[in-house]
Length: 340
Ligand SMILES: Cc1ncc(COP(=O)(O)O)c(C=O)c1O
Image (cartoon, rainbow, N blue to C red; front, side, top):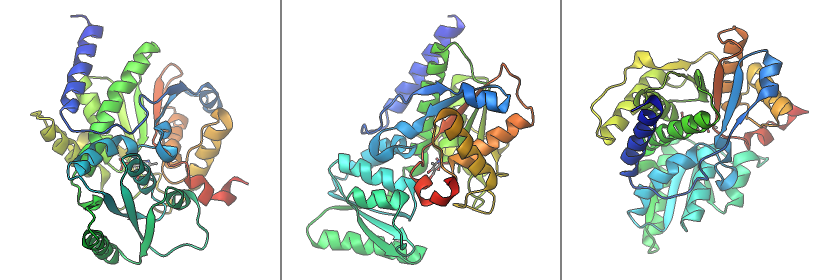
């Protein structure tokens, strides 16, 4: 077998393993991959491609639609009529979850931690537009209590609630999704006649676990760089743990260790959810060179990490980077004064 057919056989084998996990179809995939020559030129750096996972379709798209295919398959097995879910006020996950539930004919009750802001913008605005029953809870504990209360109320009225926060699939579903994305992306790059040297993605561990498995299981030579947008947990150990849990689900007898995980915590700035000077610069640069909209709290920080590595001259002109755009674009409207 030559290298190309061995690679194709490995891809088929990975897809077959993933196909054993129940799934509903939600995301528009394969998402496009496009070269960003103006961005490369502006940075005087390597070739850059953008994997457009901001274009997965439902409710402005983003990375969560891929994992919702597995999570909501698990949900649907219980035949609910209502999904009750607790998330944050500007959650990209909330927006995509409600959009996905709409497609599956499920009502949604969204319990957000915090108080209703005076100006409703960004993801929250879209949550309302999508028709979720939006309620607020001041603390995490109150949010948990509200999830149970609302589920009980639906049940008392004869409905069938499912609390999505209790669905155990979130981590593994994200890793499966980005394992599959690796195969998708490598096939697209192969058709374009190029091999990536490194992938960059905004990561708090879940999707990155899939990219790490993708590199391992395809035997690919590229590096996987996660850039975290939060200091709330230690991302490398979380990524390795999720990768190992996913290997178990796939029935594969191997292990990933924390020291193989590259995750840069140097671009969080003042904290989770707060734009940094570097993320604003990166967001402007992608927009002004390629017409690609990032957001200043996730993808902008990941792009800032990639840009910093390019400016440190870690890559030559012939090297090839792929920036995995995980979405989050509605956040630009909540930070409107940054762009004026
Ligand atoms: C736009 C965006 N990028 C990246 C992430 C991080 O993804 P993960 O939790 O899979 O690491 C999120 C998570 O909410 C997100 O909304």
